[in-house]
Amino acid sequence: MLRLVHDHHERLDGSGYPQGLCGVEICFDARLLAVCDVYDALRSRRVYREAWTHEQAIAFLRDGAGTQFEPLCVDALERLLARERNAELAVAV
Image (cartoon, rainbow, N blue to C red; front, top):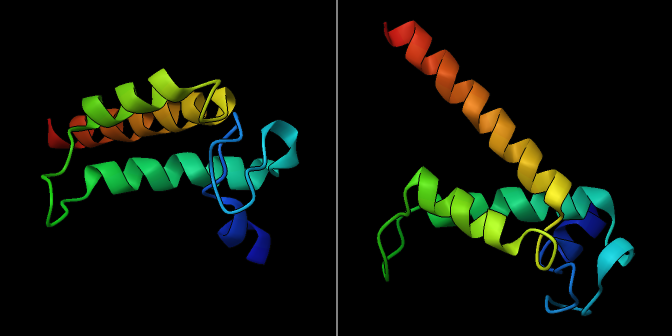
């Protein structure tokens, strides 16, 4: 658990922190958490900016897939969120 907290700001290309790890040096769980954390941060309102839309956040993650973010994780999050959104729409109808 501590490793997840410690490493989830690392990026595939080594541009993250605190250690500048890259690729498989970052455990898969931390790569997954990184994608979820960034999505959550972008979708949340901050004092210095408004929350991004779902589409903007997903586009940002897609743009960084393969460099900053693990592509499998970006794809998994996108599919999961699409499934949840479809379920919410089905209930609303």
